[in-house]
Image (tube, rainbow, N blue to C red; front, side, top):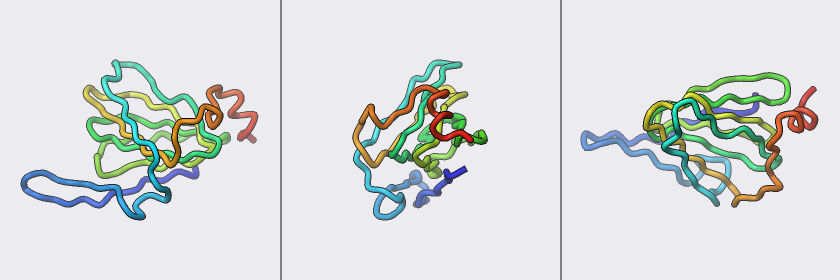
Length: 131
C-alpha cells in the first residue's frame, strides 16, 4: 500500500506537549485544512478516493480507523496519537470508521476542494485502479 505514517515533531513540556506541521514535514504545501468532529457512534466518513490529491490525516483527539484500499488489497490503520498522521496518496480509497467519543480528525490537503478530483463510487474506483 502506497500510504505511510508520519511522526510529527513533538516538543515535550510539563505544561503540555506541542506538535507542529511546517517546513518539509509533509511532501506538499498546505492549501486546505479541515476537521471532522462530533461524529455519531457507528457513523462512517470518507468513502472516496482522490485522483490527484494527497491527504494527511491526524487524530487530534480520540481515535478512529482508516480503512485503505489500493484496488488490490485492503489495510486498516488505527490513528490515535496527535503527533502521528497518515499520508494517503492519490488513487487510494479511504473510509473512516470506529470513531471514539470526542474524536477529532484533522485533514491537511495540498489543494482546495475540487469535486472533479473525487471518485465517490467504489465500483468506479475498482474499474480505474483494480487489477
